[in-house]
Length: 241
Image: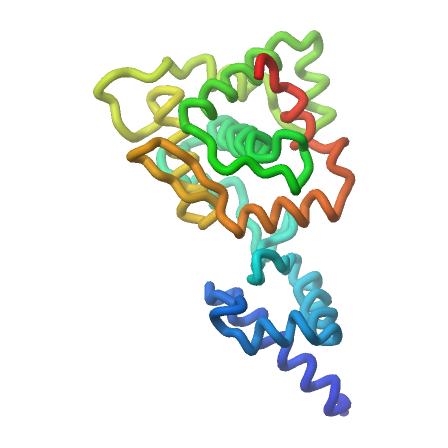
């Protein structure tokens, strides 16, 4: 029989995880008791991280709040390419989906220009994001062995460049969809907004990072070597900025 103390800790950790998975806020101001159990009880924190890890999840603490997200490659809580194509409007194939990934990585590296989590930019203009993606993909297209770079990073850069090149620049009177570069980027931003990773101000055409995104990125850079991965490769493509 499990000892009473361990059972109590397990129950408290599961209560926190259950609230997070149900989409509830666990913070200093909401579900405060659950937040304090995580924040002030190392045994509860360790148990929660252990359970989350077994479920291919990460629990992050930041900005006086807890956040949960799937580990990279998670088959249990993560999305397959097919599921994401269904989730993101107007995306119909993997080449367009991977182009969306590239846009997201470009946005992250624009928020964190020095590739460190303590240097966030307050906001990004949508048009600046479009121009930045264009510049980086132009630099990518000029690489001598683009296919080798793709294999090394496990990413089909050739096809992404082709998708972007086929998209015309923004056209007057066209709204929504993915029929030009600006519309494509706006579509990806709407998806990020629906996932509470950014705040999208379409009136001023500005993108703000949420506390959820800031916390995930902070822990991402804390957890691993951030200079040898795909995100850093995308950062290295920045030219003329």
